[in-house]
Length: 251
Image 1 (cartoon, rainbow, N blue to C red):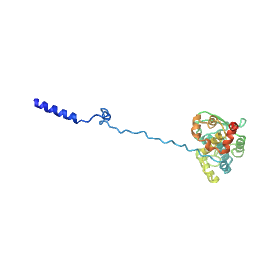
Image 2 (cartoon, rainbow, N blue to C red; image 1 turned 135 degrees about the vertical axis):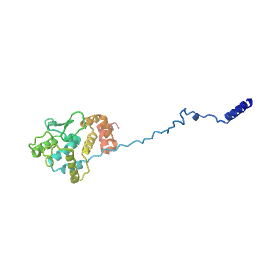
Image 3 (cartoon, helix red, strand yellow; image 1 turned 90 degrees about the horizontal axis):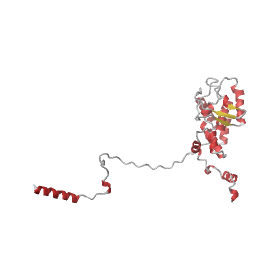
Image 4 (cartoon, rainbow, N blue to C red; image 1 turned 45 degrees about the vertical axis):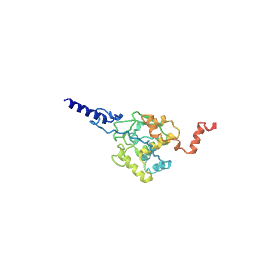
């Protein structure tokens, strides 16, 4: 028995001598090797460069307006360009929303539009408009709208049930025809981008532009149109801006 114990002790001492020294990585946890999992690294994200919103030139807008053969169609295009409203807001417009005395129109969110026109805004917004747009509206009422009994400004006059509210399908069919006639590749929302860009380049404050565009917050406007920086301005525009704030006078 004593010789057996001595043999076992000698064997244990030999094992201890041959065991390598412990390193930092030896103590990975009791579950190491039992519930192994792959360590994933957080991917490196490259900074995304925001694409600038496309806009229409003055000549392209005029070409689209000139391609309109009907006053209704010209009013719809002019309205979206001058106010920057969404196509859903335009199609949902009622006669009661237009105030010729105040020269304004009110964009009201409605859930019960017969043509399913929808606007994203939550609150009504009164938007100032030029007299020329109101004159076009008046001409449209006398020359084409006539005695129709309908609350909606834009209605079907030649296709579909006459006098029923104009819907998205009819509006997009009109846009396709105008593309061919004017030779301009555009969509209704491009009028909105063009209007917003013109506002900010003209020096309209961001918070005012946000109200006119019926954005939910000024952060939305800044996020979409934050690309309007010095790179968008010509040298003459930059010089004019410096003169306006009196910066160059201090040189």
